[in-house]
Image (cartoon, rainbow, N blue to C red; front, side, top):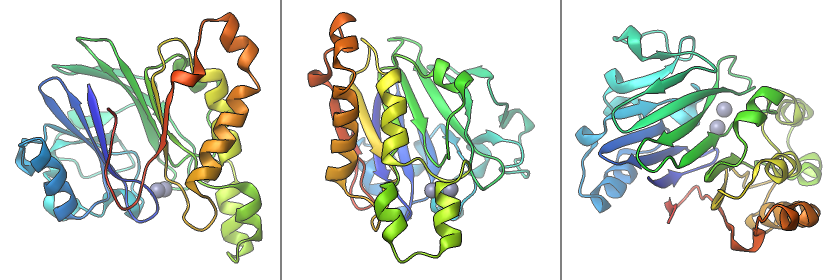
Length: 257
Ligand SMILES: [Zn+2]
Ligand SMILES: [Zn+2]
């Protein structure tokens, strides 16, 4: 598999996942030019996208709806109730099989009422990629499913201190910090500390707040948290120094490898 994030953050969210012969668009919160440019690097066009998976219907994830083929959208009922093909409705905790890949649907907790994350599994290499963003927390069942995956695209939205001292309204701060808001650097790092395993190669931190976070802060919070668990990693043959840890951007694409 290969993966490229076109953009990630409150200005827009969209990624392409290349799974053998299949081209998957995850969320479509991008403008047409950015999507066309990334596809061009793959010698592909918008019509070549085989599947579209949608996490939830906030504007920063759906603003490209005008120019995508909505009949290719796969999502939870409630996120989008007007799909032409009913077979494209997904259920939480179910696993779906397509030609080149499988996808497991993960429950996320967000203030859009209906929202999901994904674990994509390459049928040929068995590599697994988690796509988790826009969630206040993750439940125990989900965390169990997310263990020892190859690649994590994981929200690391804000630093709690910088969010609290920002000039945002108290209502907005409360919403973001709530169980149906966004993952902080701290919570994201605590989850990843227990999730990574011998198979893990890359962690791409997603949906960073421009105002209440920075790339350096998100990465240093994660590294400090991982280092606190170093004895466990050494005993279990996990080398955290080999991990590819990066931050996704709102302005430029990021490739997995
Ligand atoms: Zn959202
Ligand atoms: Zn969002």
